[in-house]
Length: 241
Ligand SMILES: Nc1ncnc2c1ncn2[C@@H]1O[C@H](COP(=O)(O)OP(=O)(O)OP(=O)(O)O)[C@@H](O)[C@H]1O
Image (spheres, rainbow, N blue to C red):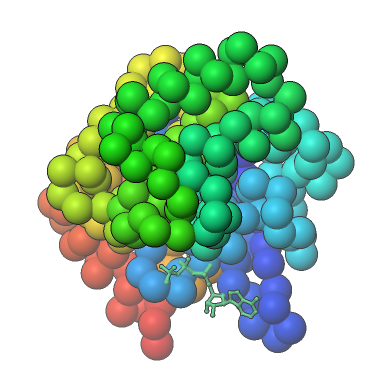
């Protein structure tokens, strides 16, 4: 459903992502893990079709990010780390605006907007200008926007950023529910607890390279350790030199 095929990104002489390949199947949550600067955002932006790879390609639901970026945007919900909501519009207006861009039928869009406002507990602030909302409230609106057109694939860049423990848990449960509906979900994080709670498989990224990938027990077993944090530490000394 989501596929990275030898994705590579050079910024001048610097290689931010190097020949990374993996897949995310329908009904699966894959965690992209890596320390600051590992290349997670760069990789996710290439897969979402908003950043052109230097080499390789991304595929979402059969559509190539290079050849068919429009279809990729139809089939994908993308939560970007730097999404800025219009300061003057309310979350309800933002959802309506993006639903119109996705050409959702008006009655369906209205129902879907109400459903997401209820599901993400946005009622108390749904009609306030986004410029007046807290970071966590804005993040809920952004997540609702990614879910709006009910895409079969979701790419979420550090979705729990700015959320308190309760809101974060609430979002992780929403991701699980989406997985159970058969969606393919790829999300990035450096919070290992989220990964244990949510992920069927992980991709460990460091300095632009995939160190290992697979189900958590297998990744840990290959590194000869018990936790993902230890798995990272196992690989890092030889790479950071
Ligand atoms: N436009 C750019 N020009 C040059 N270098 C860039 C650019 N964008 C990102 N980089 C570099 O590429 C590397 C990977 O950045 P990226 O934002 O993908 O990492 P990340 O894993 O998402 O980090 P974080 O967890 O801190 O958000 C970093 O060294 C960053 O400085």
